[in-house]
Amino acid sequence: MKRIFYTIVLCVLLSCASKKQTAQTKLKNNQTFEVTEISTDPSYGLSAKKPVEVGGVAKGNGPLNERRYLNSLAGPNGEEISYFRAGSCCPIKSKNDPYGLGSVMLDNYRVTWKGAKDTISIYINMYDYGTLKAPKGFTIKK
Image (cartoon, rainbow, N blue to C red; front, side):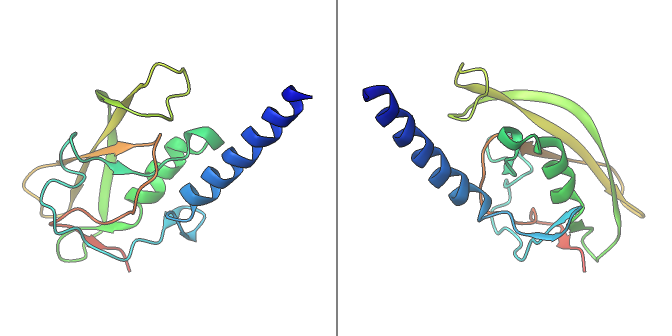
């Protein structure tokens, strides 16, 4: 009887957490998140200490959510961007670590656009959810 009770409580808690997490990641279309704000924090997304939190790993959408986020960005004057995944880096603490170790790795994407002098690193956390914004210096794709 206790086991059934705890199973029900766990299901309810997970269900509530899931709804809260996905509420912050609204889709514009299947390949793009709806991002409506540009961050005023100069390190948001551009530093491993303040990564963009797109979530999705628990539902098998982590890498897709990373691309959905990047597909919502444009260069400083609205230029179309291009990007590639440079690799994983930078361990951070997360309660959503699927292995139960309490630590996950960020993904680093290198982003550029026509006329850019160099690529820019954007750090993305696909384990945790947060409010999505464009990093300072970027704009939002129309």
